[in-house]
Amino acid sequence: MDCLVACLSSPSIHGARNRRASASDIFEVTILDYFRLPGGKMIMRDLLMHLSSTVGGLMIIVTLFQNNFPPHLGDLLQKYTSKLVRLLYPYIQITFPEYTGERLKKSDVYTAIQNYLTEKATTGAKKLRADTLKDSQSLVLSMDDNEEVTDEFQGTKLWWSSNKIIPCSMSMSVYPATEERRFYRLMFHKHHRDLITGTYIKHVMSEGKAIALKNRQRKLYTNNPSDNWYGYKSNKWSHVVFEHPATFDTLAMEPKKKQEIMSDLKKFSEGKEYYKKIGKAWKRGYLLYGPPGTGKSTMIAAMANFMNYDVYDLELTAVKDNLELRKLLIDTSSKSIIVIEDIDCSLDLTGQRKKEKKKDDDEDEEGKGDPAKKMKEEEETKASKVTLSGLLNFIDGIWSACGGERIIIFTTNFIDKLDPALIRRGRMDKHIEMSYCFFEAFKVLAYNYLDVESHPLFGTIEAMLKETNMTPADVAENLMPKSSTETPETCLRSLIKALEEAKEEAARKKAEEEEEAKKKAEEEEEEAKKAEEEEKAKESEAKHAAKSIEEAKENGLVANGKLEEEKVNVKGNGVTN
Ligand SMILES: Nc1ncnc2c1ncn2[C@@H]1O[C@H](COP(=O)(O)OP(=O)(O)OP(=O)(O)O)[C@@H](O)[C@H]1O
Ligand SMILES: [Mg+2]
Image (cartoon, rainbow, N blue to C red; front, side):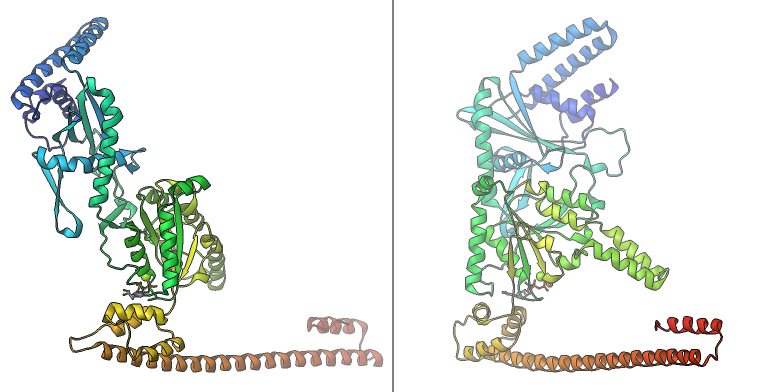
């Protein structure tokens, strides 16, 4: 009761809105809303103040009655008061909370409304929030918390308000700022119920989505450590604006292969109905593999730009367990690419079984083991308990279907290291090999870096690329002019020089390897010979011993007991009679 009185007499009822709400504030907001009089403009503040204090008084009286009179009288009073309020207040309100599904996921409806109201807010609201849009060139203004705007639809007036409340909590929280709840509230006259619930809300959704598409600023996300996931509006992902300039045009790759990937992506983006028909979740997995510097990460950027998707760069080592992995997945939006780079390094996904075995072997060899090493191992185990099966579930378990229209990409330098289950078709539907630079890829780089489509030196380069393995990254580095005096010709010549050096280096390495292999083979041969000789020596020794016993037996020089003893010794040396 004290709380109620304090609330009604508080200056905040007429003024400050941007502050933390208590239970009394919720009541305050309700009263303000109930007596908000629709008009051409928004609230007439004086009248509102009047009405709110009148009803506030009325509510106090009702509460007093309820507390101090017999229950049946209190109930009666409550009933008539409600009737009176309904009579005075013929408006309907709909609330759209920011989060849905046990607060796991941001509501699409809320986002659509937010976009829809952006344009209304610029003209209607008094408190606006400014965000930068594409290329940080333009500003977009949206409604601030606890602000209101009017809308009109087919001659009907409606009122939107953005609300933020932080409920009073009796418990002491370590994370005080995370309990705030945002929601939009739509208010309209009860006569227009059908129009609003039937047509208007659909109109808001489609407009909001169209605006979002128009203003879409793609994002590059990275996962936060779970220690920062507190509160229901937990930030599992942090993001920056995705601004990578790579496209399929600038990607150095065989044109046929490039075209094939682009068609595959296009088919996927148009495949909503098809995926539904075949009963498959609308997602596709790509495995990009190849040596470092062959363009795997560049390819991902080109794909994101081609598809106009967001990118979620998932750092698996920061994920503690399978449950966290699932939560991260649920928190990704559709039209996105989820990337796990260098999957072979992220976790020991070559199979947990091998890891177990290796650990056993190590322990056998090293007795109790080095304490520092043990601590490090323990630390690693603590850091991530994501298992292969957790990752498999992440890719195509039941949860992977929520959201739809998602691409999952793994990259690796060593495809052979991965567990076959992880990369089988259906999980990683398309395997793309990123290879060393061939002539077709070189031409793309030459055009990108030097603006040349043909040159007399191209023939030499083509021949050299056939003989030498050089990554597109190295080719690109050699083609890039290092000073303003460099011309395309000097750059191409520096590439030829680099290719010659690379060829020599490769030949030297090959010779070294061959030498090494030869040496190893010789050593092995030597060892085998030695082992054979040892074996032979043992055999002859045993034969000799057996012969001596035979002789002794024949000569009757050795007693029976002694003979038996000798026999045992001979058996011990690997010879049986
Ligand atoms: N196929 C390519 N087309 C265009 N540029 C490329 C290509 N490959 C490499 N590059 C250039 O080389 C740089 C390194 O390439 P990128 O990071 O994509 O290689 P990566 O395969 O992801 O390497 P890693 O395995 O080490 O992650 C890029 O910034 C890009 O400029
Ligand atoms: Mg990379």
